[in-house]
Length: 330
Image 1 (cartoon, rainbow, N blue to C red):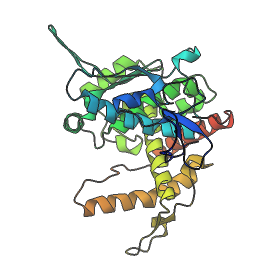
Image 2 (image 1 turned 90 degrees about the vertical axis):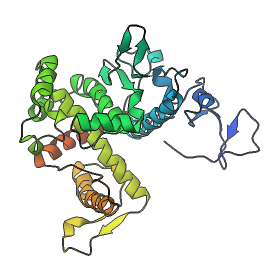
Image 3 (image 1 turned 135 degrees about the vertical axis):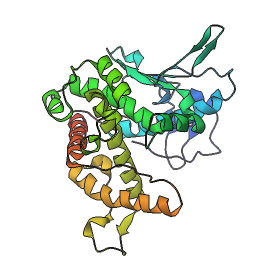
Image 4 (image 1 turned 120 degrees about the horizontal axis):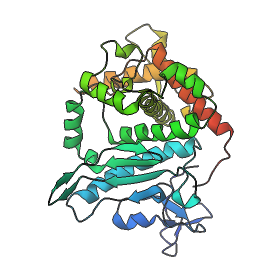
């Protein structure tokens, strides 16, 4: 379980003692680079934290700006791991010797005398590659506009790519493959050809009725990954609303559907019905507030019944995994 610890300044270094706790810690080894502030229990034989020990390749710090990019990327990855740990989802490392460990390459395009080798964000059998250029706001915005996306964030990339990983671990190797195909389609459709067709033709005009994004129409795997990321967006935002004691009672309209008291932790919600009932008024409030600030909608999505069914599938998939998994320590 997560906790934020103030550190006792009188503790004997390099060990750190949490105030009010009978426990000692040391900083993750990547704290030396200024990219991580997570702690590791002193009795652990690990030098890296739960997030950083999954790194395979890190950015080349001899390149100007890469330290800042790495800091932003690690912050987003830690936010992802918060969700994975809360849900007790499997996060095996290479050291554990499993067939598909969860591994991250956090790298940028490579400039050589022969030109530039492009690095593409993606997933391949447990290896998630993130192009650190996405940490630059201007570059990410350029790509968002070029691809016609309403929403593109660094955290969103992590949540999308981890969706591909858990499709392999929980759907392909699990017990819900038939239901997946009924909802998302047959993943045996040629993936490369499907992507080529999407990039050449785009999505059908009626895609919003059944897909959370245009890109989700490209292939059932992409539909699942986009939906998986969206499920985390909703659950994590509602958990924050719960922690803040948020309640909404829209005075300007007489609509009970816009009233809510987020009185539960969405990470522990038994059903997705409770999650979506709370999310509707919260998302309306979010958009109303950002419009008043002159900003674009914070939540530029419409959830049809088909999309909600896909999100419900993911919620049940995660809950089934939780039922089979014992709590783990950081």
